[in-house]
Amino acid sequence: MDGQKRRRSAASRVFVVVAVAVTVLVALLAVLLVLDAQRAARTEAEEVTRALAATLAQTPAVAQGLTGSGTDLQPFAEDVMEEAGVDFVTVMTPDGIRVTHRDRAEIGRPYLGTIPAEPRPVTEEFTGTLGPSVRTIAPVHDADGALVGWVSVGVTVGSIASDIVPRLPGVLAIVAAVLAAGFVGAWLAQRTTRRVAGDLPAGSIRDAVSSYESVRTLGEALRAQTHEHGNRMHTAVSLLELGRTREAIEILTETSRQSQALVDQVAARRDGDPTVGALLLGKAAQARERGVEWTAEIDEDAPRSALTPVDAVSVVGNLIDNALDAAASGTEPRWVRVRFSRAPDASLSVDVSDSGDGVPPEIAERIFEHGFSTKPADASGRGVGLALVRSIVGSAGGSVRLAEAPTTFSVTLPARRS
Image (tube, rainbow, N blue to C red):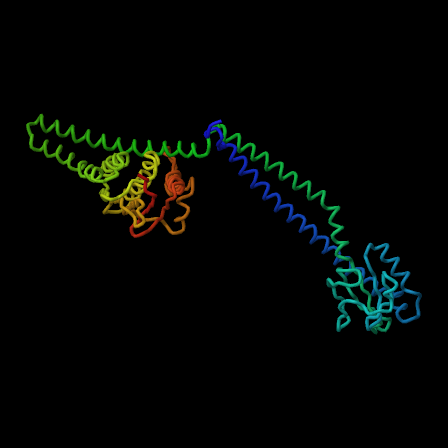
């Protein structure tokens, strides 16, 4: 199996990315649901201990048992623990000496927990003889309103954790349903991608888009150049037919001079890129056609980038197209300047400036997003150019920067090795 077949297709990558994203989100959802169940169980325990402590504190039998006029409170407390499902009910004297306890050996010993300075209910988590527990302590008053003791009702943290177990099937059902829906969505995304791209790898799809953009921008440039030369030739022929030879020669000479100036710059370079040179010739004609002043500077020592001709045309062409659009829609003077130079680190620097109104700061980052555009959508596919430029430049190890006053897109690309 060759390298092309071993590369995973774009459709498969879409499935893997969506499936992994869904799995991570579902895992987070499961954690949140478990934490919510734990919070709900703790809240329920606090409410139960608070309500039961308040009820027992107002029960006459408890006050009577504390004053010695009633029966033994230990059997009463054990019955309450069994029926209410709490872990302990501790009745104590005003100074905190236990009268009842789940472990009878602890009766007569000091209560482990907070005894309020004022007779009021307090709910807390405290570690006692049974371990960490959520408990509520409430004051017990006699018929005259005097404090005769305290009653504490608690549920251990272990019991709260065990209360979560019955809720787990519901949590698992929700997680399984969301996970299944996510994988169905990943499968549909894979099918949709395969219908569009077949089994092509992701890199091949980007190359195809780059090729399309290269053909488009180069086609527009050549069309403008052909149109301009056609008009000049028709004018020259008409002047020759009228016997105005000198004017015809001036028009043809001017046409040759404008093109030759750029050709000379391309030819003067030690490592020129004829494809980009042809693109610049066409874009010069396109700029004149749109009434935009055109300036192109190619330093003699500017290196050739590591990009393929297709990618190079796609990057430079899209930047120039955006600059022409911005300049043509702005106010006078309208101009576009392109410069190829050698960066300090020996890489290629491409700067494309225009006289347009600039890019608002609030969308300066979004202009590189796929599908985002400040222009109306049309058949040329707005919102693809700058996203493709950043993708190509980033894949090559370069960078794209946007500066203002004037609006300038600066691209730095590694130089091609000899």
